[in-house]
Length: 290
Image (tube, rainbow, N blue to C red; front, side, top):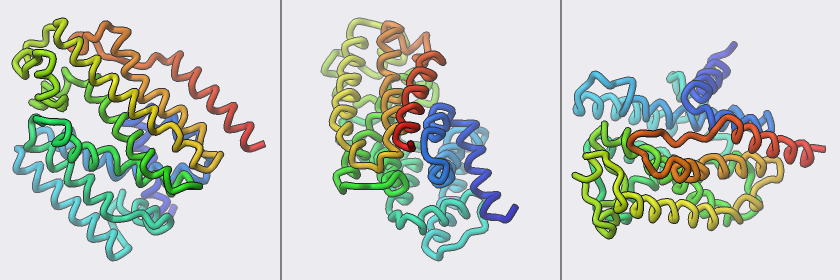
């Protein structure tokens, strides 16, 4: 196996291990597209691992140095078109094949750096800077791989990526508190009488429930606004994105099912629902391919 194939295999392994729902969705894509999606995931996952997991024993300053060192190397490799990094080789090949702007990867690394020091966001506008780099650019990177039929697909992809991220924020309130972070905008929480201190008490109150309902409504609105973009992609890619939209945005359905108690229960899509959604998408893909 040559070095490029090894790199793609490493990215696929990262995807299968850390992004089970994401990996499942990629199986709905034509086989020829999957390696490139794995490469994009591999870059994002490796950077995220430096921030939250691989370097969990390091100080903030050491994590920042590790992220900057790896990130700057990847960005430089992207500019010169070659890399000796395990993940970088596949990423560069993917970027070159689909002419993906390097600015998207710069924005992603900027958001990962923000995670090291920013512990809360006062407004949704402030949060949007973070979410653009952590989620919207993922959608923008994916569009050329999926196959674009209409340029409007890019704006829709941004909105869907943001919806995925916001759904995660809602589900992960408790986990993020453990890391000292609150992603739900402080001023929006305040509209319902919720403070950071109330969240840190981890006791579900009527005020917190109403605040979560407000955030859930935004996820569903973004999902609805993004939906037309699916038809702007190549037909063979649509079942995958439809399934991903249903499963990722469906996280908020699971939050409702647990009575919004994000402190004591983890909202999780059942295996049965995953199978139903992916099976239906697989049948659609087979119809498109026939």
